Structures are given as C-alpha cells and as structure tokens.
Image (tube, rainbow, N blue to C red; front, side, top):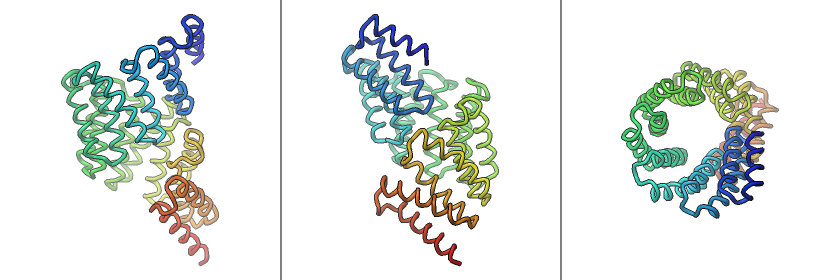
Length: 332
C-alpha cells in the first residue's frame, strides 16, 4: 500500500490530477481495499479512477470498462446486486464494442453477471450467462484455464439453487481440480471450492461431510486471508449453521460469535446479512434455554429486518414468532 500511495503522489506531481496514470494508481489502491474487505474506501478510489478515465480517455475506453467492473465487484460484495449488475452491464457494452463477442474478457464479464443473477434467483438468466462464459473460455483459452473453473463454479451454484445437488457437486469438483492444477492446494480459490461443496453437502443432509469441507476451507482462509477477512467470516457462519442443524448448539454459538464482529466491522451495524446471523444466534440460545441472550439477539435481528425489509416482510414475521416462542418457553 505504501508503495502505491507514493506512486500516486509522484504521478500527480508529474502529470497532474487528471492523467490516466493517476487513475491507474487510484484503481490499484482501490483493489487493495477490496482485498481487505474495506468496501467504502475501495468505492471512493474506484469512483475517482472512473471519473478521470472518462475525462481523459472517453466513455468507451477499455479502462473505463475496468473501472465499472471494479465498482460492480464492490457493490456485489456489499449485497447491492441491482447496482452491481448495472455496473457489469456498462462494462459489457464497452467490451463488446471494443473486443467483439468471443474475447476472454467478454467471458469474464458474463461470469460476473451470471453470479449476480444467481444470487437474485434469476436462474435462467444466470445459466445463460454462465454457459456463454464457459463456451468462450473453453474455445479461446482451453480446458485447464482458471477462468473455466470460475464458470464451472457458477454452474455448480446454479444447479445447487435448482436442488440438483449431484450435478452441482460434479461442477464444483471439476472446478476444484482445475484450481489445484493451476494454484496448488492452499490458494484462496481452493477454499472457495471447499466452502461451496460444504454448502451442497449440508443441503443434501450429509452434515459431517459439510463440516469436514468447511474446516478445509477455514484452514486455508485463515492462513491466506487472515482471521478477520469476510471470507473467513463466511466459513465461520457455514460451520455455525451446520452445527446448528446438527443440534450442537454450543459449537454453533461459538462460530456465530466469531463471525458477527467481522461482519459488523466490514459491513456496518445494520447490514442485511446480520439479520440471519442474529436470528440464528437467538434461536441457538433459545435451544439451550438461555432466554435472555435469545431475546437480545432476536431483537437485534428484528430491528435490522424491520429497517431493511419493512415491517410486513416474512422474515420479520418469522422473528416475531421466534420471540413469542422464547416468551412462551421462558414462562414455563
């Protein structure tokens, strides 16, 4: 980071504040903040980079497309999926104009759009974009390219959403094999594959295999990303939810407690992702007949859900029912 900041200062001194090299430095610093999970800082630097690139290079520059992609990544990480899709679509339009329909960069853009559609449960669109991505990469880069693993991963996620778990595992296993051949056994992308396979096994009801794959993912993520990274928090949550389904509530709470502060630090106190975290913590404490913290965490979940989803959302109703359950149980 220090070297990039020094480079930014030197480029501003030599070229002025609106030169493309300044935009490139701003973008690089923004990328560092993305890796750290500091999305507010990342957004500021990438927006500054986009503004300079538009002014210096024009609206349809490939560098402008890169800025849109980075902004899309930030919004996707923050859960702002409509905004992320808009940014990716802007990048796609520029790239199609500049590079044609069969360039690997087009495939990478389709991949990002597919991921967003999958998260929004637009599975037909997600599959369409993912198949386009897969086809372009296979034809242009070959069957052992890391980008193909990304496409296979998304196809696995889509099939998981469709409850075709065997097909999902097939795609995730193919992606894992490609990543191991390219990166070795301890790369963060290997952890990503393990994490997703753990999710599939949990949905299939094989909780022990799910725990095993989550632990594999956790070991890599702590080693390569650190214990306070958002991806590490996702693994903590995966372990917590699997232990909860298994009925091992003490272990579930232990991992919820590890995940929650990371989510708060990276996303803020009222991010929608915290709704389920707090709700599940409340339910776990309820299961242990520890009713005071159960009410505390259900109230936290309820406050965020009412603010973010509205008072009549089904999630709000479910939390209220859980609170009634706690009230009834504690009165016995």
